[in-house]
Length: 117
Image (cartoon, rainbow, N blue to C red):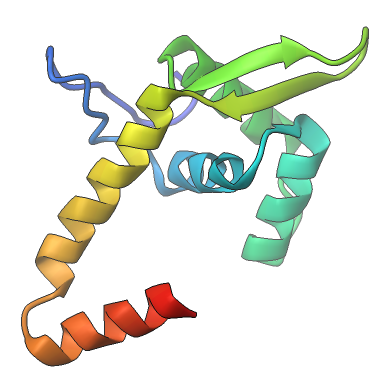
């Protein structure tokens, strides 16, 4: 695997995705995209160039793990789409993060404000 990652037992929940892989899933949650469009979104987020040698092996790992589906748009271009398992992985990460972050009503209000915007 290209970045440290492991998948838990039969629950199917992915707990050890790297931040980079989680960001790929978040991008694909918006809509299916081809590789260079994913690369551009990541570059905007990181404010630096994302190497093809980092992006595509991670996409391949996410496909192999069933979190992303890869299809051919044409002979040179692949499209990547979030699977139901990928969607569940994002929700699992949100749930865990929020369970640690939301410790009082003020923080809960902050999260609600983010969601409403």
